[in-house]
Amino acid sequence: MKTTLFQIATIQTGVFAKTELEGEVVYLQAKHFDEQGQLSAMLHPDLRHDHLIERHLLRPGDVLFAAKGTKNFAACYESEDVPAVASTSFFVMRIQDSHRSKILPRYLTWWLNHPNALTYLKGEARGTSIVSISKSALEELEIYIPDMQTQKTILKISALRQHELQLKQQLEGLRERLIQQTILNAIQ
Image 1 (cartoon, rainbow, N blue to C red):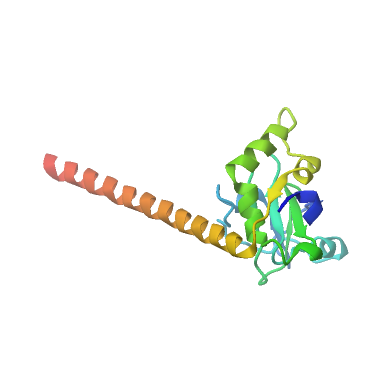
Image 2 (cartoon, rainbow, N blue to C red; image 1 turned 60 degrees about the vertical axis):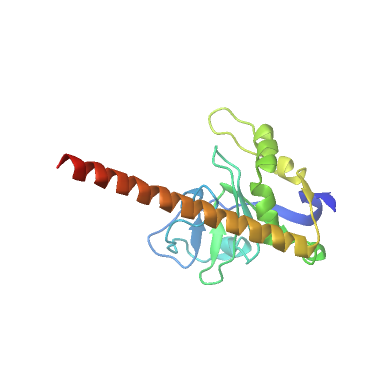
């Protein structure tokens, strides 16, 4: 099935808030994620839970898209441990109830991170000092939605590929250490 993001998900911007030293809600920012959209920082609740924050609380399965700057990526929010909201660096996408049985949030995340989707979205970015991808550009993004089994297979292949890349990186680090130690031993 081919559709647009607008037809399957609601899209809203993250919330602007001032952080505090202590709070009950995590304020997710782009700096909390690595290049692949994986959480890379320990999260610390730094917002007070009030009526404004309540409306923006993330739910498991919400998809965040970092739309500002050059580091554009999608991440699927899956935590239920600590309440969180997304900063204004993100658009928050929530799959509509009528489409929840047709598309997995993690598949939508994979699709948004695909080089073809990112190339399209970056081509639509506007701004001079800080480029930004607009909500309308996201809404118009075409999405191909295969059957659930195919989505699960794609996600499995993608996870295996990421694991392979991590192993290769570890292997390269070990080789470099071995070579450096061998050279050091030879000159001593």
